Length: 348
Image (cartoon, rainbow, N blue to C red; front, side):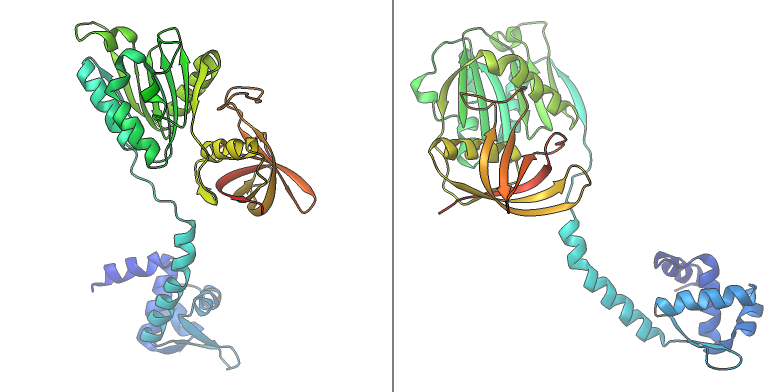
């Protein structure tokens, strides 16, 4: 290994350029006084004393400050390397616990002119859904996505579906989603998947292959929540509830907050006593929370009758050790706790 590469590796361990000079000088001498090191490294003796203390704390050298004059001895390199490796291995599990794997940003915003392409992209997005999707779709084209929706619900995705252009839900469509509403008016196709990708297509494009209208397909983490807010603010409240899935077996753990809200609502209305284990952070001071508690209230707008004050308000009210907390999802600021993960169980 050449000198430049060796110096670069040492700097990666947090040593400054001057600290590298001092350490390499020590290695060459094995043991030396501060004056000798200062002369060779081209630094002051006071600086050598300061640097030697830092290098000693990091396990690179040993300072014999009981000797007169004070001497500094480089520890055997194999001992230094072994210690660095042990430190790296020791912190690896803690780093892994804190690490959230993310894909490289692939934000995009595409204009699509083909009806066939729109439905191809919509089905692909639904197939890739991990946790949650919201969709409004006219009844006339529901068959374009029904199999994909059914598969998403069957693998545990929270599917919120609004079928427009009808006052009644076809009997064979009740199992397409976690909750379904219908609306007599025909509205555009609006899809969001995991609040990061989606599509918006006008009615004219959905109805005909020959039209000048265009659809929008997006993959933007900031746009998804805006479309979701529009869906729940402008369309969901005017539609009529047509089908709601049965609650799942508990215990169950959710990273998606709205899914935990949905299941907590279903079980609460079945007169079940619920407990929750909540991992997250306090909204006031960002302190980590791991709370075992009893669920005493649910605020939501997914299932009738709703009880939220504004369209995207969804929260749990819980009690633990005589204290009451409110719990919200990602980005919560009105609630006491912002939850990352919730485990629901029956309180038996």
